Image (cartoon, rainbow, N blue to C red; front, side, top):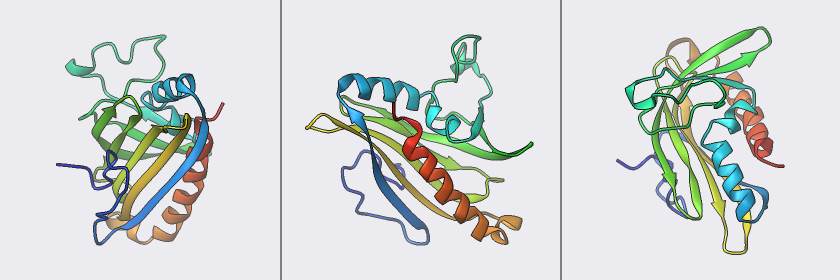
Length: 176
């Protein structure tokens, strides 16, 4: 099943009904070296970490060694079930998720995750790093979202504001 955000498609045409849609591209830099460096950072959760989140991934048999000392953040893997914690002053709010897809080609790398029960929103988010034919590197964000369940429906305006703030942070997270 293809992710709702269609991260492998150059143009996101079939947007699902019943969700708010977001897509934007942010210039990161130039060149293969920039693309390769940023791809490794992206695939080790750095876009989220540098934007104010903590990532907790439970090691499993498939993730043996991914959390060992000195390696930094674990590598993103399809099927991984991280808990993403947003930092709010002294508090950390958990946002359960599941990695739906990881993709790595010569000119496009990234991942898509979907929210799990307990997350403030219901939806999906893709982080797509693109190395264009003219040697420019862009981070493309695509997301679909709607209010989460329970108490999160009441706080939807605040959640929407938080999305705007964090997208701005994502846009700067991989720049040198």
